[in-house]
Image (cartoon, rainbow, N blue to C red):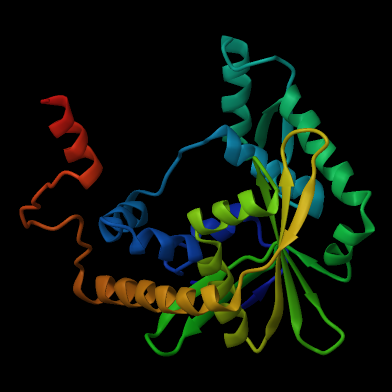
Length: 276
């Protein structure tokens, strides 16, 4: 059992294996309809699922942050051949990241785009990448964890966190939509809480969004304080669901009540008009 504290150099695989410690992604799962049952299934069975966009994301982090799993380049244009599939499976078995040449070129392009910008690199200097943090929420005595992409101490004694996100569009209006779709405010609150429990006050939490198409444009973002207040309540609810699940052994799905299905107003109007 891991003890509360900061861990430097802990691998991504080791971090994600600590399933008894609640993470921000776990909280987001718990808050969804049927989430507790899905979360319990993950606790019991884990996942061996690999997806290309996850592999690309891990590789981008390794390229930009300078730490992470090793990338294996598969020099084919797609995964259709048996040889490519076998090479991919071999890389997975060795805990490496298999990427097609086109993806490797994209990863390198992103790294070059960010490293060539002093404004972006200012958030990636003077600190530590991929720091794993473990702490106990004393209100519910729930063990929690977080893994800032980059943690650095600021001149005023507080800390800044930089979180790297690869995305289809880093345009401010588009990335804002992604942020709320993927629960980034919940991530901010969870990370801040875990670190504060360890005596580390985070006063700056910045997202660096970078596009996966040339010229690999990037942008910087932070979450509005009003939205963070809502996320605080969401995190409280997620912690509560987690604590109750462990205490009772009950992780509900959709419930057993009969749900009445009613057409939306626009669907009913369309159906009525079709009868004219």
